[in-house]
Length: 265
Image 1 (cartoon, rainbow, N blue to C red):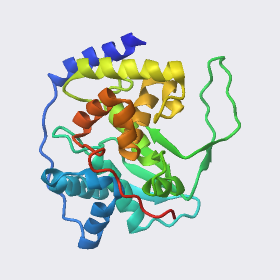
Image 2 (cartoon, rainbow, N blue to C red):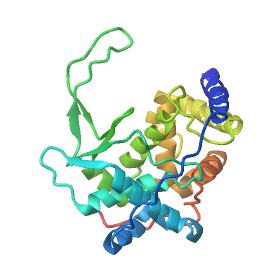
Image 3 (cartoon, helix red, strand yellow):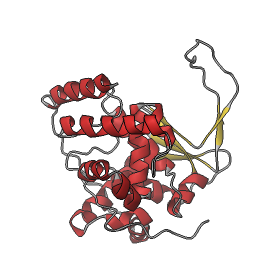
Image 4 (cartoon, helix red, strand yellow):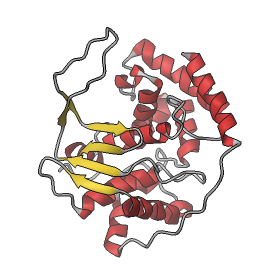
């Protein structure tokens, strides 16, 4: 498994040499009521003053560029749009961050939804029974979220499906990697992530991290990103090196300014 992280790092280092910067036009400003919603996101209290303008601009860009679709009768409100855009902005405060270019649509369901997958398992069999999901990330297309579970994250639930699926989109921006999004220091990333991933695979139920992260390096990145924003103090206490890595990557320090959770819906 070490080869997965190292190989991804080496390929991505080479890819950076060919990257070109494109200046995006400044999006129109948010209405003041929407700006207040973005600032009121519980997880956003860790955004420093020096990044506040960028945070709001990234949220504006996400709202401008993405289509929100309500499913199973859900009527998408401004609050829903702004909440998801706020989470997207939190994950894209790095200087080199993009505006999730592959995401064209955000599909919102009222609650968990049923999905039928047609991919064969390790035995070559296809199970046609629908599976209940709270979120999905489609490479090169969309994210799908249960609004009930997004709301639960605002009230302090350890699971944050929006952060998790958006982290998959960051990972997918480098399609040849798994669990290694675009960054400057791949050597450090691969060393820390590999060590923590193996730790989770050995113990399955260590403090803070959801055991689902042991499924793959990609799922591990989604899970640790959730923990970083939902349980930052605990993550720093039990996984200090991992916390420091994510803090440098996301340019935030939520353990110093932990979220003030909203009342449960």
